[in-house]
Structures are given as structure tokens and as C-alpha cells.
Picture 1 (cartoon, rainbow, N blue to C red):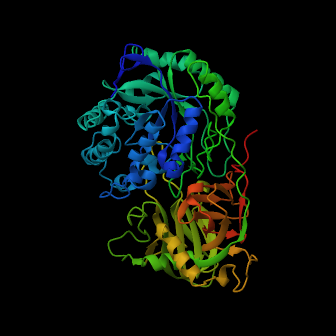
Picture 2 (tube, helix red, strand yellow):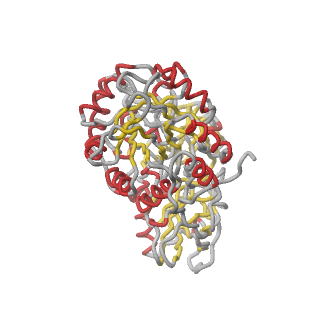
Picture 3 (tube, rainbow, N blue to C red):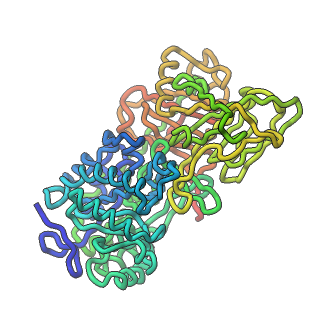
Amino acid sequence: MSTFTIGEHDFLEDGRPVRLLAGALHFTRIHPGHWRDRVRTARLMGLDTIETYVMWNEHAPTPDRFDTDGRLDLVAFLRVVQEEGMRAIVRPGPYVCAEFDNGGLPAWLTADPEVGLRRLEPRYMAAVERYLRQVYALVAPLQVDRGGPVVLVQVENEYGAYGDDHDYLRALVRITRDAGITVPLTSIDQPEPQMLRDGSVEGLHRTGSFGSRAVERLATLREAQPTGPLMCAEFWCGWFDHWGAHHHTTDAAASAAELDALLAAGASVNVYMVHGGTSFGLTSGANDKGVYQPTLTSYDYDAPIDEAGRPTEKFWRFREVIARYAPVPDEVPAPAPPAPALTAPLRPVVGLLDAAGRLAAWTTHPDEGRTPGVPPTHDDLQQWRGFVAYRATLGGGDAPAVLSLTEVRDRAQVLLDGAPVGVLHRDHHDTALVLPHGRGELVVLVEDQGRVNYGPRLGEPKGLVGPVLLDGVPVTGWSTLAVDHDGLVGVVESLAAAGAVDTARGGTADDGDSPGRPLAGPVLARAELRLDGPADLFLDTRGWGKGLAWVNGFALGRYWSRGPQRTLYVPGPATRAGTNALVVLELGAAAPVARTLPAPDLGHTEQ
């Protein structure tokens, strides 16, 4: 058992001054089979502490669930941290940002119009308290004074950039202490005087988030908090990427110099990120400051440990800096071999709507009691992530007609009598397109590309928002089909076992090992990748359009020809010796070939 407290100038462990050399990694963004490797690699860089967020919406996909299995097993992850001889910092939010879907807040919560987000409002606080007590029941037994690794717990996250409800923060402190958390509690804000005032209360130790001008920003932090240890609890050494933009990198030497300045000033540090990992499945978020910008699947972050767990130039430069202030292990990570380069035909199996219809039925929404032309949103349907297909019968004529959508959140793929007509993109502010005629079956497949994770648009609904018009007249008679994306792989595997090939979407009945015609989406396709043993892979998405991919049922995440990301990371523990089933949901058009590359390709930079 140990004690960990805040002294006049330092963190105190058993009464002795200590400096925290921490690194951020998010256990939900790492395959559990890689937790130990990533933690150990961070230790070999010279770190002694691991910091992690807890994503509320991952643990509680519905109000009555709290999941801790697989990559959500916080206790197992913290045990790995302890077994590697490191301390732990836990940041459970309730809001975390982190370029994560909805900033970690459950969409079922933010969809309630009566909930007062991130303030002392009864409905919000009741849900927050239930969640925090569930998390703290896991964390409390693992605190340092009970023989565990946890030395700090953060309350909320950069609250000074959002609000100033100090009663709300005090309530979070009370909940945390009542739940048995005895280690010091922290807040974090950018070192701006107003943010530091608004984002913290008594009982919270203020820390800063920044990546440059370290000495100046530590001085601002010290002015706001005259005593206690200085800490940059998010030392930004890289950045995240948006679809359609460039891959962000930062100069390794410049980042190392800032780290040196921090440590020379006597501050503690948490490198954000030491290892970014991957926003697997549909967990990536988005930003919107006038233009909606969804974030990539890769959360590589140009970190010292890359998405695949390999040391980068920053690793070695940071290790050299840390060695000036603390012992670093003699051991260094072993070089990683190139990943296997594989090629296999990618065969269409079943159309997306056909597959989704095998998992759920279309739901009819009567026009009575609804505003004419306004279909339900994803949130009305309790479809918190992914896709919903909207269907209506148009009774117009043979002449071209204009289909108008009030607002698309976030991508609407329009089909008329089963044939693709066009796509409306939120980030392009698209709201209308021309149909070849005004009659027939209209289907609008709407994709939620990630909920905004920062700013005033946090918690907004997804889907078709507002009336849908045909030549200015409301379209009525809507039905919807919510796509169970978790069940799609099972449909594909069942049909593939029966020898199904969708010849209408690019396959040929007897194509053998030769690729057929290009895939025509929205379609689910399958390939078999053969390995001698489990191995990390980099799935080449060049030549594909837009969609999702799974390996052996493990959801890798989104790909998109917009880039900059050109490969999807496949964690080795998700693979196996022999045949590995790759399932791809292609929304547009794709080459009928699956390839893996020896190394990742995260796209072009500004340089």
C-alpha cells in the first residue's frame, strides 16, 4: 500500500516528492491482445505512468447496459499497467472529447431534449451519477492506497472551454468522493486565465493542456494556482486528421525541445498521445466550426508509438530527453518486421439493403401526427450509430424532378427503383439533386459519419433533419430500415458458406481466383486472406470508394477514397493462422481485389 498526495510544490508518494512522466493511450482504441505491448513500449521510452480515458458511450450503448467485456475491460487494462510497474491516471469524463463519437457522451442521453448537457440539470446529473458510480466501483479498489496503480482521477474535461457551472463541477467532486475515490482529483484546461477560472473548483488540482510555449503556459498555470505541482496533463505532440484533408505531422525535434523545457521547469507531463491507436468500428467523431469534418479511423496522432505499436523518431528523441531527468530502461523495443503483403479476390455476396432486411424489418411511419414530409431522425429510431435507409413511393411524372432535403447528417445516398442517382454530402452543404423522373421507389441511405465531439453542436441528432420535398411538395408515406451493422458479417458468412455470389453487383458465378467486374454498391463483399500465423496487416483501400471493413468479425472501421488515410490497420490478435475472412461494405464502386501492404499509408502531409 502507498499514499499519493499533493504537496506544497510536488506530488508526494509516501511523502517523497515525485514527478509523473505519463503517456496517454485509450484502452478502447487498442485490441486487448496489444495492451501489454503498448504499455511496455511506453515504459521503454522512459515513462512511469499511463493515462486513459473511459468512453461512457462505449460502456453504456443503451441506458440499461454497462459493458466491461473485451476492449472495454478497464480493470484488466489497469492490471496490465500495474503488472508493467507503472502508475495509472483515469479520466472518466463524463465528457472526454478525444475525437471520439459524441465526445464519449451516449447519444441516447443527448437525444433527450430535456437533458441539460454538462451542467447541473437533474436528468443529466441522474445519468451521470449512475455512470460514474459504475466506473468508480471498478476504479476504487485499484487506487494506490489499496495496492493498485491509480494515483490520479480527472473530473470532467477542459470544462473551461465549454461552461462555467461551478455547482456542476462541485457535484461531480461530491459524486467522485462519495464513490470511494480517495486519490487526488484534477481538472484540465488550456492555460488561459478565464478557462482556468471557469474549469475548476476547490478540491480539484488544476493542470494544463498545450503543446508549445511551455514555459509561458506553465507560468500562467502557476499564476492561477500558486501552490502544488505543475503539470501539463495533455502535452500535444501530434494531431488528429479529418477525411478529405492532410495527414498531420509535427517536427520531432521541436516537440522534444518543448518536452525538455517542460521537464527543465520541474513540471510533470502526460504525453498526448504516446500511442493513439485506432477508432475501431463506428467510434470516430467529428468537428463542426461551420463545416462538418469527420475524423479518420486511424488515431495515429503522429505519436511516439505509431498506430501499429512501432517506435517513431519522436520515441527516440523523447527517450533521450527523459533520460536527462530520470532513469530509462536499458531495454529498447525490437524492430518490427514488414507486414505480410497479400492479394485475394474480393467477391460481392449480397446487397446492403438485402442483408439489413434479413436482420430487421422495415418500419412504416404513418403520416398522421407528423409534419408533412418529415421522416424520423436516426435518434427518433434509437439508431445511435451507422446507417438508416429511408423509403417512400413517389407519384410524380416522367419528367426530371428535384429532390430537396432540408439537412443531411451526414451523407445521403439516393437510389430510385434500386439504381443509384447521386450522393448528398453534409460537408459540401448539399441539399438537392435531380432525379431522372418523379415516380417510383425512392430510397435514401443515410450514414452518420460520426457525432461532433467538441463545441456547441455536441449531441445534435443524425439522419434526415426537416422536410423532404419533391419539386417543392412534401414526400410522405415514409418507412425506415435501421441497419444492424454488427449483424452484417453474420449474414455474409452464412451466404458465403452457401456459395452465394451477387453477379448483379460485380461477381461472376465461376470466377475462381480471378477478380470479377468492379463492385457496385451498396454491397457487402468478402475475401479470404491466408496467413501462416497471426500478424498485423495494413489493408490497402486504394481503388475502393467508401465503406467499412471487418476481419474475422472484428470491426476495423471506415475507409474513404477522399483520404488522406489509404490503409486500415488490422491488429494481429484479430487474425489467425490459415484463412481470415475479410468482409467489406462498399457504398460506391470498388476494385474487386483485396490487398495488404508491408507498411501503413496514412496519406499526404503539408510538407
